Image 1 (spheres, rainbow, N blue to C red):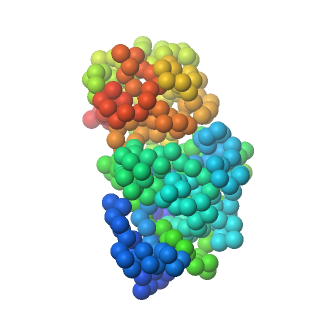
Image 2 (cartoon, one colour):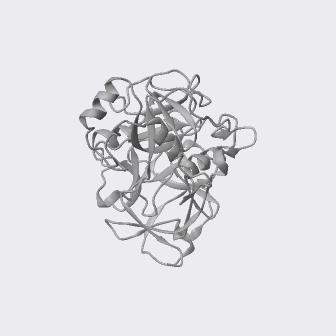
Length: 322
């Protein structure tokens, strides 16, 4: 679960900007009305409902600031210096400027996001087709790896069901909207925008195919121990903590040994590296942040596999004590 003290949306700003205009389709990604289409063609402001996620120095692919279309990701959030965002270029053409009232910042399309591509063009991990999804750059170079990743997770807004929360963005915004001077992540202080935090969940992850649970066998505490599937029970090795992007048992983090299909998944000393970073999608898959690969039951072994949304790579979470 994610918590954020500044979750409120500046609806007054949106209403002011869009006065007299017809907004585009809602969360289902329905087509624009004829009036909305004419407004877009004319470069007038229009509102779109978007799922906003965040990425930074340590979970970029590859780690660093490189982008697919615009050099190094950057920006402070002003109209003159918008923050880089990643999306599907058919959804938002490269160079498109948006304004996000929730964080009071301008952002500019300049990178690709694989999950955004899937959410827009097909049945992605968060929904779709035609689900608007943007991934906003928060920086983080020189900051604490765990704090950067947790900030990204803390800023991402979801519903209690785990489904993405869609919030309004303004396409073709005027240049004079209010801008917050607070950075999304301050690498000197490791402070996250608005004091956003994550909360740790503890519990079991049961594979839908086998009905067995992800486990640190024997609760060993030994770095390099391979994750296994075990009959679901109340043993400590199945009580897994999830904090931001890290699965932790006995102070060890779940890690893929490589980026190749079939790679072993182990419990290894936590260091925040990109092979220890995971995300739980609303469809129940557990995906590696770097590439679209999922933790799955492959012939009874826990391995990195293709994300299929089938029973083998979907996991049911049961909170500890439930």
